Image (cartoon, rainbow, N blue to C red):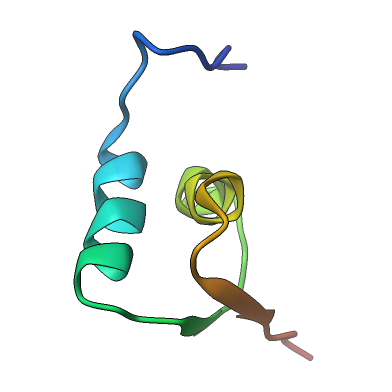
Length: 56
């Protein structure tokens, strides 16, 4: 597990920053192991609302 502090900046954080820069307020997605870091970064940033979709 990654421990977050001011020295850790992940590619997922760049995506969350991009959403804020482009004023994207809502995203939709199905969370999984491969993209969980992206959802975590978006949630930690707190700017973009995540609508979690469910599969089957």
